[in-house]
Image 1: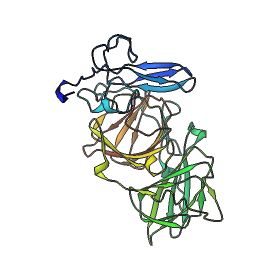
Image 2: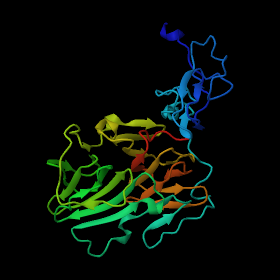
Image 3: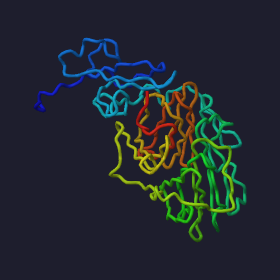
Image 4: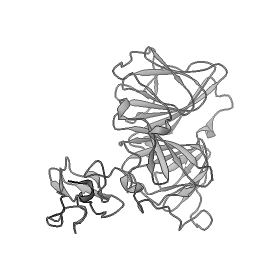
Length: 358
C-alpha cells in the first residue's frame, strides 16, 4: 500500500490505561483507536480501517499492565512512553507552584530524612557521616525497613586504599554509580577504570572491590536488586562472568531518548545483562511534571540542580546528593526550580523503561 494511503490509528488518549488482569483471560486490545470500549476492541469500529485488534492472554491473577491509548506504541498492546512525544502528549503542571502552594514542607530529621506521604521519602546520605569516616564508609539509604520491596541502596566513600571485597550474594545483581572521584572497580580478575557519571554492573554471585586513585575520594552509590539486607565483606574475589564482558556504561548523548521536554539515557540495562532492572541518567529542564505514578520501584539520585519533590499532601526540597525513594504506584511529581536544569540517576525495578507513567 502506498505510504500516503496507509491507515492511521486514532489517538484514543495520551496516558496509558492501568488494569489488573485475570489469569488465562484473553484481552483484545484496540489497535485502530476508534473503539467505544477503550482500551479494548468493541468488535466493529475497526472494520474497514485496515487495523485488527491485538490479543493478549494474562499470565496470572492480578497482573498489572498499562495498555496503550495513543496507539503509537512499539510494544503493543502496552505503553512504551511514545505518547509523551506526541503533540499534546506531555503536559507540565502549572496550577500549583512553590510560591502559591499551601502544602507543608517535610521536616528533615537528624538522619537527613524528610518523610513524605508514606513510604516515600528523601534522604541526604552525608547527614550521618562521622567526623573521621576512615578509608571506607558505607551507609544504607534504601531498604525494607523504610518501605522498599525490590531494591536496597547504599552510599559509599572510599579513600586512601581499596574497599573491602564486597558481595550481594548469589541471587542479586549490583549497580554502581560514581558521583565523585576516579579509580578502578575490580570484578573477579578484571579491572575497569571508573569516574564521575559512570554506571557499573556486577552480576549475580560476583564480588567486587573499589579502589580510588591516589589522593582521591571516590563517592559511589551501590544499588542491589533484588533487595538484600546487607553487603557482605568476603575473603576472596571469586570469578568473573566473561559471557558479559562489558561492565561500565558511560554517558552518551547519541543514546538519549526524549520524554517530552525531558530526556534520559539507559546506563546499565538488559543489553549488558541486567535482569528486570534498569539504571538510567536523565535531565529535567526548569519545569514541574504533572502528578503521575509508575509500576516500578525507584531510587533516584539528584546529581545536579535544585528542585522540589511533590506528594499529595506534602513536599520537600532536593539538592545534589539527595536520594528520593518512590514505592510502586506512588503519586508524585518532581520539579526542577533552576534555569540550568537538573540531572538525575535512577535505578528502577522491576522495569526497563523510565519513560512510562500513568
